[in-house]
Length: 339
Image (tube, rainbow, N blue to C red; front, side, top):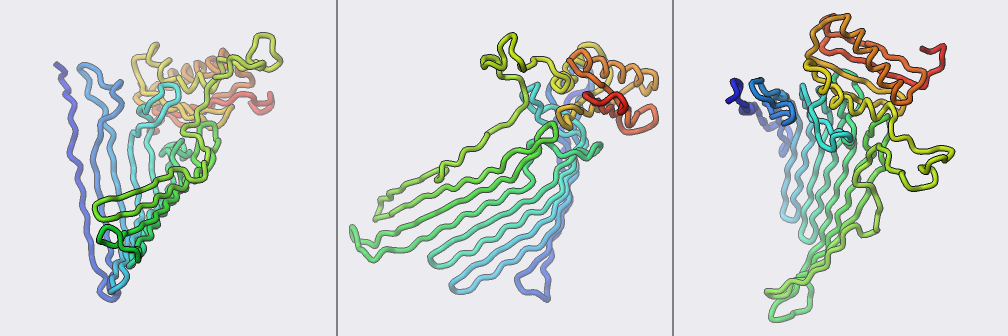
């Protein structure tokens, strides 16, 4: 039995809502919460205290509500900030979320709904910037802008059927997801889809038609970087530009798996900047400057053995100098004078 059983602390939150007396229908709100969540299961080992990610969240905003005989309106505007000291980041190499460096998400969310006698409209917008705390690079795969609109029209038809007036409804929903940050400094395409439905209710019966992706928009469900061209002319042996199966960016993306096979200390993560630059972050080191020099040399040779040329490794921050982590920036493909 482990001497350090896994523990999940309850989240704590404080919130307050206050109406604004001078403006009828408006109210302000503010909240703060903190808690923890379990980390990567692979980091939980026998007789070791399991790592937990600590989360702090702040938000504040204004809401508005007003209703008349024919209309009902509600709206909300919220600014938020969430900090995670060790976040779960999707890894292309592992094919799942793994424990990485801390992240901060700052943004704004707004939504409104207007309901009338024959219509109902709801819309929401979210704008967020998600970045790593140490390098301030954008977190991959997180969209920075999301828009959603749902519109419904409904009314009774002046054609009695089966002893009652049939009720018809038409609904349209539109979603827009802005470009997302991708590894290696790239951006995904934006995604725009429209769904619709129509229903007719007669007595106890309802007939309906639903169409998803009305305009047949094509978009990628996932965008990853790996060698997958093994059959075309470019991949055949002797081709002018064959697809390599070992390149520096993929080697460094798998540094966490490589590191654990040869070292018993340190927690390692990597963040690709672009096709010829990757940042490696190591925490829990012995805080030995000579060992950091050895680590920089090891990263240099990993890049060289993976086919990289013109290699340079910069040791930007160091735990031996009381920094929060050792950060190494590996670059390759650089001219001789820049090294």
